[in-house]
Length: 111
Image (cartoon, rainbow, N blue to C red; front, side, top):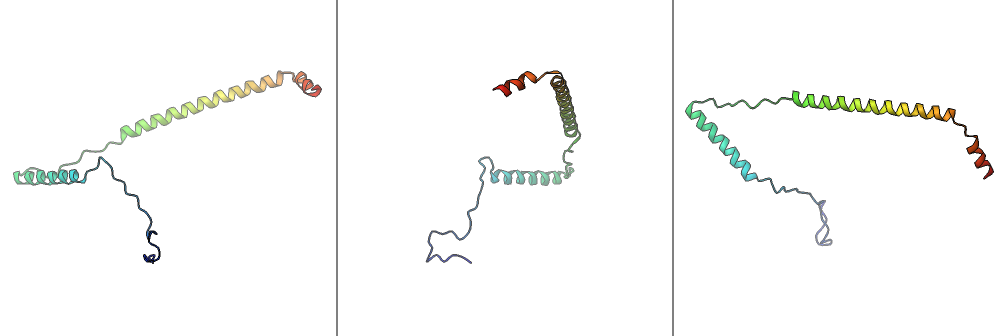
């Protein structure tokens, strides 16, 4: 149900809508390109040439290989970082076991 305009003049009856207009998009150019394609196909038909052109085949193997290589290197980096962190933790625990903290605790006790 719409809001009566008589009582509420400045109230919108429907929400605002966002319309994006790209400065690079020109529908006229798309229509011209479509017309050119149709005319080229018609001329090719009149000449007796093969009208149905096979589109270029999309190859995913190169993308897949790049992605798998990137994943492999990311996994390798993660493993190296984990090994370094585990080694540092091990050395820190060794240092904590061999260090005498009695002097440090006595300074806090006397302070």
